[in-house]
Length: 179
Image 1: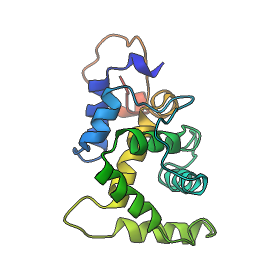
Image 2 (image 1 turned 135 degrees about the horizontal axis):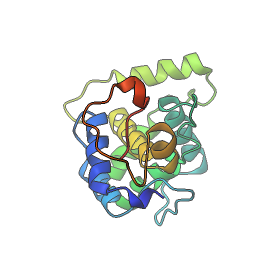
Image 3 (image 1 turned 30 degrees about the vertical axis):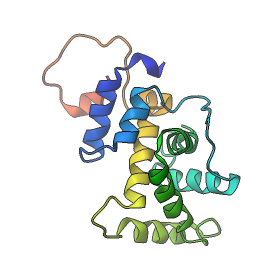
């Protein structure tokens, strides 16, 4: 179960994956137990059904199904909904919702190439502040790697790790460790 992983270690690993900077509200959400799980309740729902579907599709484009399940299977969209609805301050929520509403309306009806082009344009936006898409990617990665799927199937999670081995060739390990 995910609660058995040290949250401090989880945050450290995610910060490394996202370039070292996590939003304060994401850190607060994870530290309080807002982890992607089998079911996630949202006390303050802010997304419409269509917006939640859009969030799920964008997250799935960021972490697609490969030899391991992707973002949809890990319920990353529900995690993002919980963080934005329950943990964001009003001004942060408004900014996120404005960014979500600004996503090209043709995204949902586009093929994969069209969706990729839309997300690439969002990813290339320049700003002095963190862009909507940078924040979205951060939430997606935190949600995915804090889920059971992300920790146990994508990363290599062992509840009771074996002895310390200081130098092991990556080929022998095969995946990054979650513990």
